Amino acid sequence: MLKKFVFLLPVCVGVIPGCMSTPDLSEATGAEHSEIMIKDVVQRVKCELSEAFDKKVDQRDFRWLASWTAHADLSLQINDNAGVSPNGTYTSNLRQVKPSTLTGTVLNPVTELFTLNLSANLNGQAVRSETVSFTIALDELKAWRKQIDKMEANLPPEKRTCYFDGGTGVNGNLGLKEWVDSAFFPVEAGQLQAGIHPYGGGGGKAAGAAGPSSGGGRSKAAEILSRDQIAKQAATWAQELSQLQLKTKASFAKIDAAIQGLATADADLQNKLKVLNDSKYDAVLAPYLKTAYGKSKSFDDYIKSHKDDEDKCAEYKVNLGHAVTLVGQLQAELNKPGGEVTGPMQMAYDSLADEMHGIHANDYPAQSAKCATALAQAADRAAKNAAALPTQIDPPIDSVAHSLSFVVAYGAGISPSWSLIKWKGPAGGANTPFLSASGTRTHSLNIALAPRSGGPAIGADALRLINNQVIRSLGN
Image 1 (cartoon, rainbow, N blue to C red):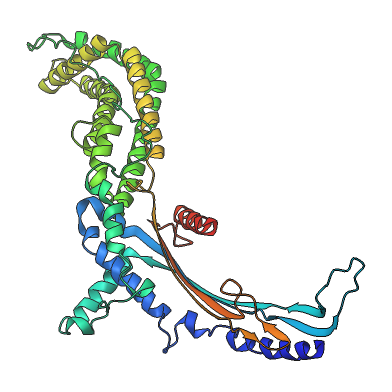
Image 2 (spheres, rainbow, N blue to C red; image 1 turned 180 degrees about the vertical axis):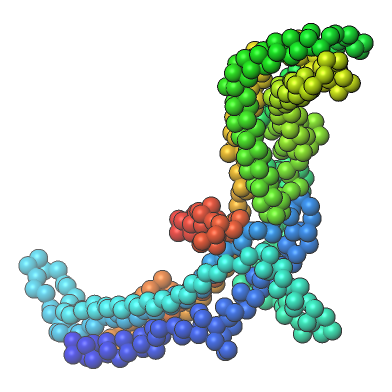
């Protein structure tokens, strides 16, 4: 009897290889006879994303999206299971025995039986999966959609690249436009805005430097002096100007350095602003600069305020230099032969007198030093502002992700039953069928959107979202 069972077992098990052959690779990769074709899924993703973003990236509040990329992970998995669980009972009648009696009671004959329960099981599983990852830049996607729309303008809808018949799973409507509209609605509603996050403070007023005043002015009536009086006054002013040049040398050097520092900082700011404007973030620059730099009108006012303060501080050096020039001209007139006061001599004297009056009234050594300090502080603030301004403005949304998963499960089983003279089986029923086969088709699509980061093309934040989606799917 054991020989019979051992003979039957290979026959039952022989059914398994037919059910447990490795799934055809075409079922995952998308050969021409497969219902799930990766190339069709990729095409559908491109079409739906271009439909969602084509007009959106042209809107002023969404121009920053042009530099974003979409990263997609497409996974197709086939899991086939099959098993056989033969079992049976062998019963053999040996003999009938009439029990002996000691009490006189009549007993029925007893049949001696031999019963043997036999069972076995064999299960197998075959899994094949295919994963494809790809990245699409939205600006490239827009150019692609524009090109195919132009090429297919005269074709009927059903002949166009982005026309799809109704399907299921990843071959059906993925709903990406609805997802995009929902994810970016806070930006459209003004709840989230592009800018520099977090805002790190502004530059405030540039310098607040004060230049020399007119000193109240002197009488417009020309002083009537002799040639000797003019010569004596010219010598006094020449000596005074020489001393002022020594006393203001350090202040003027500090002013020159501050002016150069402001020019460098302003040039750095303007270069960064050009990059930001070229990066489609110009729509948010004006309000940011107004807040950050305390200007009531525009960033140009911030630069102009530097120029105004530079001119005020430079005026000390300009006026002093002008006075030195005038005293030189006056001494040149005095050196000419003759004993009378000439017209040019009187004009040079009057101009120099006006200049010296202003110098005396403003205390050039102290005031120029004060202006140099204020301008140096302004240059330091401008340099910090230039360093603080990044080369890219943060988008209103850092990144978004979307996950789709379609699972189809199927199975079948068979449980024959027989009852012979000596053999009976199987006894498994629906829970443990004699022969069973099942399978699962799982199609997953994870998409993340984030700003282009160079290399790799997708940013770390988008990859983080995709990894989170994968971890969550494993937990389920």
